[in-house]
Image 1 (tube, helix red, strand yellow):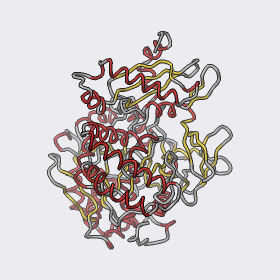
Image 2: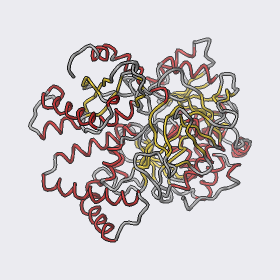
Image 3: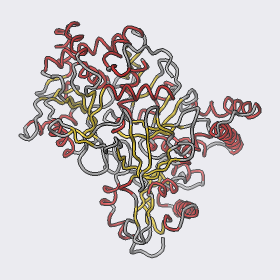
Image 4: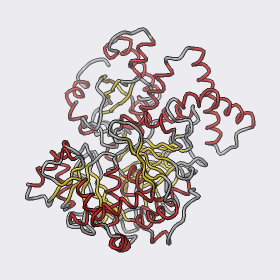
Length: 606
């Protein structure tokens, strides 16, 4: 629970601009937003008072450009200050900021521009400008003007710098105050276009009220230091970072550190030593792989000490998971292990001060959760959808079950339908998808329940356990249902397997595409004296075969993998196999590797 909050009005009446004013008045001198220069040298920081001033300047600039209350304004930028501040400025005008994924395909960009009826788009540089310019000449797209952040890339278009200068000249405290006070809690705060794994993105409208209600509910179960720092690196087009990187920091008056390059996240964590860190499962998997690779290089004596400390930490976590108070002996052993072995290792990654760690977006592999538990880090897995303003269920430090996604936040309900689908109901559940004409296509049943498309179960203690996406369940030719995520996560428990896709819908058995972990494999090979590319070495292939055999031993007959193919190129959003939130795009992978998958049903052996 945040201890510094003063709510300027009743929670159901709050808007984001009212909270920003509160921050400027109550915490004006405290840091709000920091970012590194392009060359990576040092941090530039704005206080909450300065953030509100910049917001007012940009609001005047966008108003002069012609932005009007209620209209959507599209943005395609990385996590940089121009993006963050523009978002707040547009909100203060009563406009609706909408971030488009930087990895969106041209067809998706055109769909969003057409569907949103947006007249303005704010884009970053050459790459983005070149993708948006053709839409200005498309008669079916209402887009009228581009604002380009990087001046050298602007060409004939308006630059962010000149817009800011116009705002400086025209800024009026009276006009700024009048504009944001006209906003009501039920007004749209943003529209999030779901990235989706198939089809056109759907538009999910979120109100000020639903965001504030979600923030209040989250704050009741998460204990963080006042003015806590947050490393903001996931795309703002995703509801997770929109909540964690914009709305919750304004709500909590915390400190956002923008990280425009996801490759710099690890270096940023090492520099900041944050108290909180959020990552989708693939991020935690990659971090775990890096730590495993580093541990593999330790001398045997030191590695033994680490493994003993890991065992103590896991015992301590297991005690807490059961709701028990650790004994005095276990508490003392854990503290010693943490201080002498674990924290010195974690400090190399900047993780020794973590008090809250979380994941969402997809089921966390249990072996990854247990790996981090061995360092005393309990990754609080959560679950929700864009349609529920992000988090709907979550684990908390006082009540968690490793492998589950926790229990519903206050005031929210869930139940399991007869076919296993998770249904949700509550104040933060949206009413329906936004149509192109501005009306809403209702998505709730007569009793207010929304079908999420996820399959799961609720245990006797009220914890939700995810199985898979309803549309992604594999039905074999024998009529058996298989969760591909369950099989894939079991395969990925071996550190050499970084990614996996299971295939077999309508077939008599399952096959898999496995991707070698590009960080662990070289270290694994080096430790065994293997030179050159590990991908082609027989010993690596033999270890993969043993990994599949081990996974199969833990799966039932229908879930077992009969044949597989090992790939060496990692899948990513840029190459299309993953969504921007790092979920598998199964259809893309199946289409791209269709010949390989078909061949697995024609080959003999494994």
